[in-house]
Length: 160
Image (tube, rainbow, N blue to C red):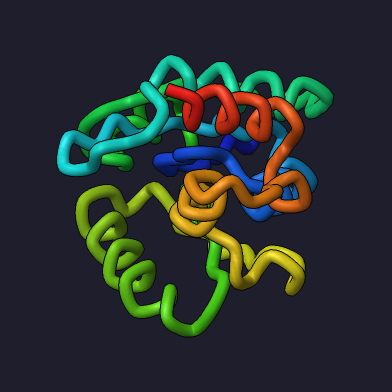
């Protein structure tokens, strides 16, 4: 039986830290579905469709990774795509408390779904999408933090 995991997130925008987690997950699971959350409580820089497109382009060389989007509960989406695991990245101890609470709630909602925590390469532990957006807003070079397609998309967004 194929082992499938989802990696949910806002990905606004996708960073090299996200891609590092996706690479690690793709080595552990037969298939990984990277799924963009449509979170109505956040005001993303990129639309859901733009984030999906940036992920598809950034992940085009990953043979066992697909991209989609969802709204609602992560465990419901995991069931919808027949996933047995939810991938979550942990950059620092400060991430752990929130992620631990979410993992326990998800287990309560769906005992058949396991949360798997993965740590990125240490060079990405300080990196997140908010920092990248802020740097781009002030015209800083973000090319070492995000894929080239994202660098170009950020430049285009900041021109508007």
